Amino acid sequence: MQKLLFTASLITAMAMASSLAAQVPQHLVVPPAYANTDAISFNWLAGASRDVRQQTLIGANHLTALHGTAIEAIEFRRTAENEIFTGGTTNLTVTLSTSTSPTHDVSSSFANNIGSTQVQVFSGAVTFPTSPAVVGQTVNWTANNVVRIQFTTPFLYSGGRLCIDITGTPIIGQNADWWMADAEFEDIPGTISDLGGGCGTYANSSFIAEYSLVVGGYAHMTAFGSPFGLAIAAIGQSGGPVPLSALGFTPPGNCNLMLSSLMILEPMLFIPDSNPIVAASGGRADLELKIPNIPGAQGLTLATQWFDWSETATTRALQWTIASTPTLDMALIEGHPLEAKGNVTTHLAHVIRFEYQ
Image 1 (cartoon, rainbow, N blue to C red):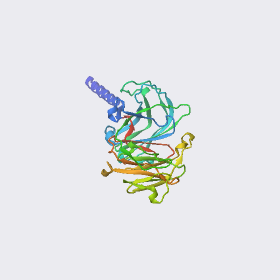
Image 2: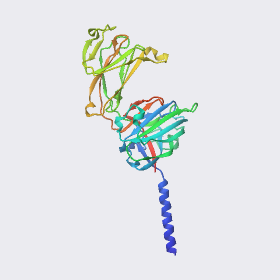
Image 3: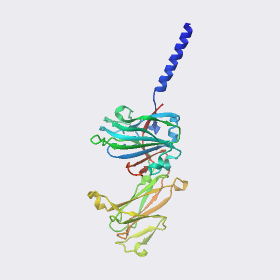
Image 4: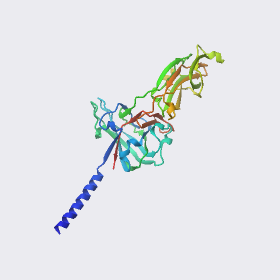
């Protein structure tokens, strides 16, 4: 009889221990190299000080430990900096979904990155803690170092690319204006060279973001010109110079076309900024060009030159070369919650800790 009682007690104890073990949360940090060490960069969080929508896409290779588990919370850790981060509170809405798409083929359209498994896991107020200064490269996942989002609905992860979609709306008077979260940055810029050829008021007012020149990303090109005037972005092989006057135009100076072929002509307007401080810069035109995820894209060299129809002038031509495909296997899309598209970076993403069971 005593032996039977002992056996029953042992079975009960083992069952209780198993149950307790199952309730202990487990953690996974992505990218894993920064589980305890500060990453190279930092980035703000949605809703800390303004209305922002952020989508973080994470490749399945980072998430093998989560397969078949329930994700119950995510945390963003502060970046290491010898200064106090003043806290605040914001309203966040968080949804998770999965898809089979790779992270380097992300879309600038928010809707295109959401998978069929979309689940709203949280909506409500989230605290940004006041965090003491951190000296050195070790940043612990303690309460005063992290913004924690405890899900009200756990998300069952069954594989694939994970999309974390967060919309943040600040609470008046409770902004966390400088609360910077840790982020990884992959240093793979494209190359840009100035070919000249511009004339007029805005001759040198063309720019290309070198870190946007990556396979699978979006090349970001900007030019300034006559406010509300017609802007034409011309993209092709570099060549020339061909005087603009030889093409029937009467430019305000020595303008030269620096392209030997035309592959893309994109018309738009130079839109002036409403801020009078920057009004003197003229109107601004932005071109976002998707770089396809194909082997031939890496190392491809083209040139961009803008035409200002109002001045019959051109900006300088910029020759650019595409860098390699990012290996981060993460992507970040940021924009306003009311806009359909955001700014894509495939070389920068937050360090995130998952809590799961």
